[in-house]
Length: 330
Image 1 (cartoon, rainbow, N blue to C red):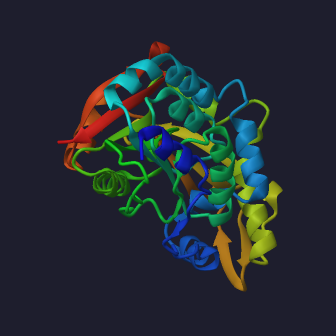
Image 2 (image 1 turned 30 degrees about the vertical axis):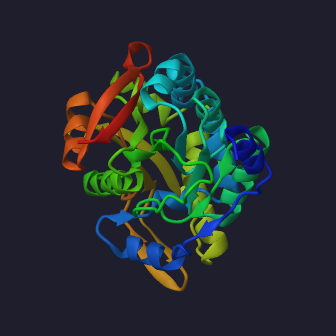
């Protein structure tokens, strides 16, 4: 069978799901443990119910939050260089796929990618995004994996042999993990891509403090609504009695930790009930809900080194507002 016949055969395939049966989220257990801790915490992964996902998309359209627009423009500008650095016949493995716009730019810009494997813990979201991309790229084999990407993920073999695996992790998601978690994730990424593979990672970079804080405190209040929607979700799903007007969104820059730290702050002393448990809040007491790390090259290079990786190419947006980094095994 020649190359053309192989591609034609692959084009007739429907996406083949590899379901690793990831452990489902324990919303109740995580919330009760987080609110009982000192300081109180709630995981940012629970922001994204249906309303939360709508609000996040609205955040990306706010004038203060230009990260998504800047990253897309950067990827468009440097895609020929990315293509040359990655080489042909790559098997693209993406951690989460979101709207798929960046994925489309990557697959369209690479030299004859042979397969695409999105890794996503939500089976429904995974299948929906894969079906959309299958229609846009009928000659790229779709091999979705339902799994937790913070653990090493086996890359399904493609019908047409791949020259190398390319892990794609756009956006600024890496910055939402603390140092220990980031290191674990990069090590898992290295194992997933293999010794001959590569990874293309998006990084939000350190810039003017006022600009960074404004991105998480937009004038229209969309980010505040997004943050407080987490409490609305707990009211609905865990029989909680949070009064949303008794809490406030707060996002501030921590120079010591090089990150934006987002909290939900109690406006007054109060007691809140969640799933039959009572939690007392002091006035101005904060629930930590999200961190958004901003990187320097020195910091990220050291993090990559400790994970067994090295940065081989760097691309920055104008004024170094955002960066793309290509990594290989050290």
